[in-house]
Amino acid sequence: MTSIKQNINQITHQIENSIQKCGRNPDSVQLLAVSKTKPIELLEQAIEAGQCIFGENYVQEGIEKVQYFQKQHPTTSLEWHFIGPIQSNKTRPIAEHFDWVHSVERLKIAQRLNDQRPSELGELNVLIQVNTSSEESKSGTTAEEVMELAATINKMPNLTLRGLMSIPANVSNYAEQLAAFKQLTSIQNQLRAQYPQVDTLSMGMSGDMDAAIEAGSTMVRIGTAIFGARDYKNKE
Ligand SMILES: *Cc1c(COP(=O)(O)O)cnc(C)c1O
Image 1 (cartoon, rainbow, N blue to C red):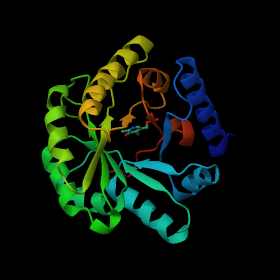
Image 2: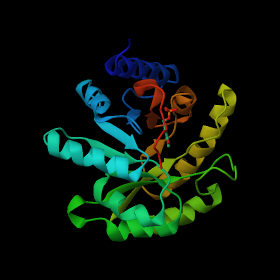
Image 3: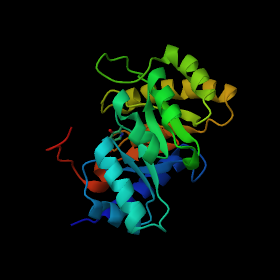
């Protein structure tokens, strides 16, 4: 049986290989461990293996984990990223517990997160989720709308705009994966030209990580390859 630690080591190697192949700087890609649906024990194993950045998709489940670790491991410094779809009536607990939100796709959500962010926690880091594949069913703002949303978020005192996130259509062809990611990179370059604090491009999952890194990802979101397949029973 492979352990979480072995999986993390293997993914870390794969990230390093991809970085090297395309000549990017070492350490230019962070690993976000996506732990949705997974029990606390597996997160503890990941932490023992040195992982300290976690992504969660469901508000209630995510908060329970954040609170558990604050209480049981108060000296372990962890960073929590909310990466799931956001309903407007769930913004408060997100603003009160997470360090980052990757899935901001409309003004109303950004405004609520800003208004509800407790000042003692400092600014909430946000990424705008972009829909590059223009599929009706996929969430994310359109490429055309990004600059306008970014300008508004940039003025909000309790949010820091850090960049973009996308979940492109699930295709296995490398060239198609690369083309979709490069669209996001080009929007990111426009953003960076205007907002110097923008430094994060969240793209790449277990199945398309290499193409994402070649296209310029700075944060890959890996679930299955670390924690194994998910069981969605009992999920919202
Ligand atoms: C579940 C999820 C992931 C992880 O996907 P894997 O294919 O399991 O690596 C990454 N990003 C988002 C937004 C997710 O919801």
